[in-house]
Structure formats: C-alpha cells, structure tokens
Length: 111
Image 1: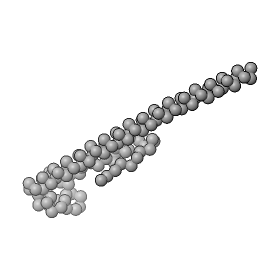
Image 2: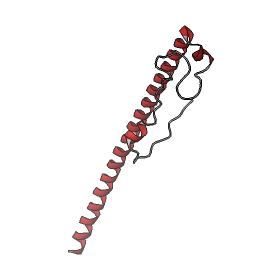
Image 3: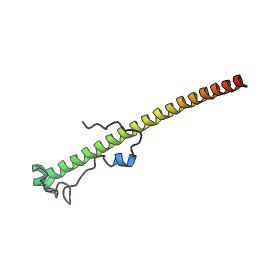
Image 4: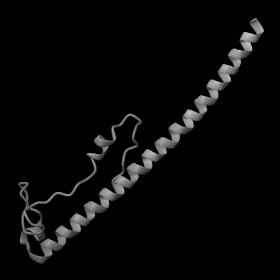
C-alpha cells in the first residue's frame, strides 16, 4: 500500500499534488494493444480485443481510486496541520498576555 509522507508546514500544495498518481494511456485506444512507451502492455493488452479493453478499464479504475485515496489523505493531513497551527496560535497568544501582564507589574513596582 502506498503511504503519503507526513508533510512539513512549508511544502507547496501544488508541488505535492504533482506527485499524485495519474493514469497513463499506452495507446490511442484503451486496450487496443502494446503501449507506445517502448514496452509491451502485457500479454492481455498485447492481444487487444475485449480482454485488453477490460484490463485497461480496470487499470484506469485502479488509478482513479488511488488518486482519490491520496487526495483524501492529503486533505486530512492539511486539516490536521491547520488545527495544529491554530492551537499553537492560541498558546502563543496566551503567553503574550502573560508576558504583557508581567511587564505591567514591573512598571508599577519601579514607579
């Protein structure tokens, strides 16, 4: 099973999406024979006909499902990153308030 690597905060979303698996068509018509990429598409594809078309359709379906799964995982990870950063903002805002309160306390003591 393919797993997405945990994304760091500075990763460009367009760059990551370019790695999502896309289907590749080996010939002008799906299942019509060997591919144009220099290798054969396998014995079933090479034979062409109904079995070749069926195999090509299954392959297309597999890659569409895989792409959908990867995009869902990517969206989930991005939402988790957003939640993490929103939580960090709250923590930092509370720290800022505490420090400002300390500064006010120091000023009143020295006056």
